[in-house]
Length: 272
Ligand SMILES: Nc1ncnc2c1ncn2[C@@H]1O[C@H](COP(=O)(O)OP(=O)(O)OP(=O)(O)O)[C@@H](O)[C@H]1O
Ligand SMILES: [Mg+2]
Image 1: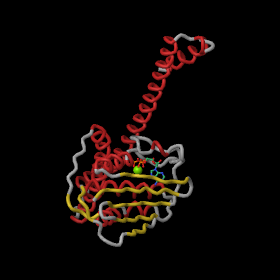
Image 2 (image 1 turned 90 degrees about the vertical axis):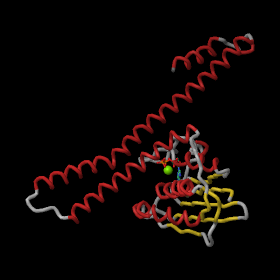
Image 3 (image 1 turned 180 degrees about the horizontal axis):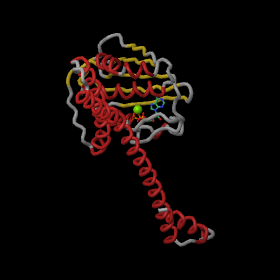
Image 4 (image 1 turned 180 degrees about the vertical axis):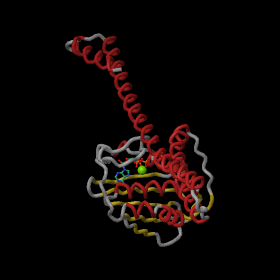
């Protein structure tokens, strides 16, 4: 792959003054540099995919290994314990295992979404629903993550905002934006607001965290892409890509404004 690049470099050096090159040579050169750009883009995509596979393997193993160990421990207790095993103990153990398998399945579904949506397999099942209600249920479901990140959330949504949307997909949009705000929000307060006009609902999620460098902004809605300032925080780089696909499928838009070190605001507009 790198050979191509060398060919392009040495080609332009040995040709000397470009005004003396024949049209055929110029055409060849422009074809070569087009190929070099394509190879570089493919190399970049390959690197992102490698990274994704290793993150995916890691994230899937995270809940599985302790669940496996817990089942082994239960087996040991059941087979070796002289005292009878109590129902309460067993139920507690099983609940913990179930929670871990739930996390495993959620992660697996996110990974599957990354390939299914990419193939254009997105079927929306619209129904009458209230964006405020959906947002409240997402905030309740994300409470653990928000609490772990010690992040207070303020919701400004005075009235129901009803529309004809796919509820699960709407939840996915809100949940990705809120969990990003928690992950990258540096523990500072998050403001979620919902507004509506006669034909459009508008959701904004604002945090006061690490922000996104201007150079990275054009890439963050692409699959597997992450900004350079994320440090060691885990992430697939698919959340925003999924959100952008869903917004487009719902004939809506998503916009972002960000300032490194000061925070980020995502604004989604969806026809009702
Ligand atoms: N609120 C935010 N503040 C700062 N950076 C953000 C924010 N939201 C997204 N980003 C940047 O955009 C990138 C892409 O976001 P996206 O949600 O697609 O992926 P992720 O959070 O890395 O992983 P995951 O797919 O698990 O959500 C992030 O890695 C991060 O660099
Ligand atoms: Mg994310």
